[in-house]
Length: 107
Ligand code: SF4
Ligand code: SF4
Image (cartoon, rainbow, N blue to C red; front, side, top):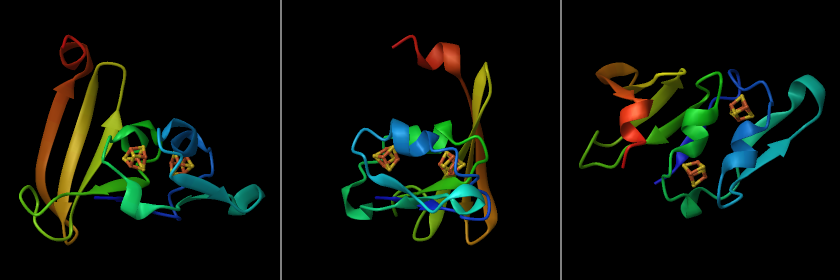
């Protein structure tokens, strides 16, 4: 269970490092070269906070074999009302799911 961070999409905002409850993401570099790095991949428990908070969809979560199979990933695009989840495998779209933020916070 872990995440992958796309260095080319990352602008170094640091939001993912701040939100990770396990302090598993580290910021490295200065200025334009400041990037997020997954420092402890074995310790990620898949809370998805970093995936949702990234404003550039630079973070993908690796899906388990029971969901997406090997190499499957999940990305999130969040707006005020909904979260758009995109599941991919080997660069191809598997599924797109939209969840309402209001409805998911009822529980
Ligand atoms: S939230 Fe996204 S853009 Fe910001 S540091 Fe993390 S990976 Fe980079
Ligand atoms: S999914 Fe959760 S535990 Fe894993 S790196 Fe992201 S914020 Fe941390």
